[in-house]
Image 1: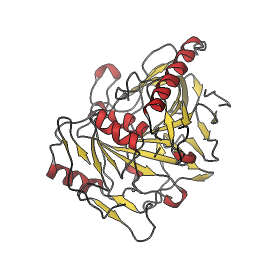
Image 2 (image 1 turned 180 degrees about the horizontal axis):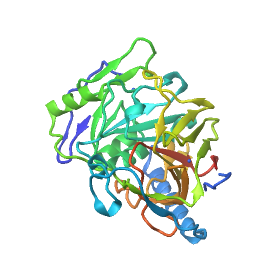
Image 3 (image 1 turned 90 degrees about the horizontal axis):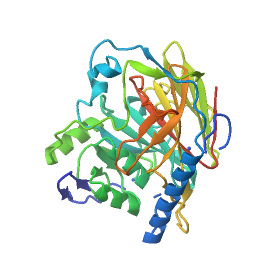
Image 4 (image 1 turned 90 degrees about the vertical axis):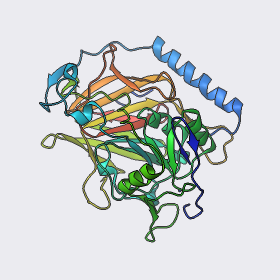
Amino acid sequence: MITSKKHLTRVLASAALIGVALTSSTACDNGISQNVAAEKTTEQRAGKAETRLRKKRPAAEPAPTMIPRGSETGEPAELGAVAPEYAKPTRRPLAVIVENHPDARPQTGLDRADVVYEAPAEYGIPRFMAIFVNQDAPILGPVRSARPYYVAWASEYDPVFIHAGGSPKAMRWIKQLDVTDVDAIYDSIGGFERTSDRIAPHNLYADTREVRRAIAATRDLQGDGTWGGLRFGSQFTVGPKEGREVSVAYDAGYDVRYTYDERAGLYLREMEGKPHLDRESKEQLNASVVIVQTVGMWQVEGDKYGRLEAAVQAKNRALILQDGRLIEGYWEKDKRDSPTLYTTQDGQPITLKPGRVWIQIAPAKGTKVEHR
């Protein structure tokens, strides 16, 4: 379904399409409750977790520093000169759900995204949300269905949210948060194709260029969107500790690792012990910034699909790795659709190095995070 900021318009249905407490060392949908009581329980748990965090805040680390590096042009001046496209998006973002089931690997097009989130979905099988601002992906996918926590994170960017169906709660949140969306299953819109080399539902792909053109032909997409809570600048925050590698091991047996390549100034991504490559380019996926974001997550009680719930409206710990250094800080999101703010332990805003950002969601329980 397609919805706008002012009007919710359903384009004609198409039946053709089917769709990380953290510690520095160790420790550590379809997610829906089918009734109101479960949703209230979710909010109560998130509130209690935030209260405990505020009472047990650890002593501050040595203060991170601001080092002028990078671009010499652009705004805003108070963050150090930064290329204009990292000051404010020059066009409206697209936020696309991409699956990471073993049958969907390797994926295509994540190497072109500006921001990528990864979080577990049912039974611990991870799923991505790729946000495209400065580039497009001629082939992107496989595209899969929405979960409510992804809707909340997507809303920060004021994007067009692209998905192939979704859990009942995700579909409600799309309406409640007034998120402009395209449902690749039910909306008659161009830019999507099912391939014959994989079986459904692991074979739905999008061309973001065509999707943009198709949307523009059916609705007003004026507006540039935002970078959400991400704050870029050439004088970016540099942590007091080494941050050359971080690994995240999930309780379902899935694990990822990011290793800093000093020559390239990028973190190279591995998945289950192997380089994570793009299917088309054969290039290893990488990022200028890696954020490991601890989030309370749990399985919805009684849900027959094993769906997960996430405390998106909360405050918890975060690791930010950039330029080979580590910042131990916090993330905070006041409302479901408010920006996620990243701060140092003493509450100072964190400025990011311009470039691709990977946000690795680490469930607070059952996840092992290690860094060096």
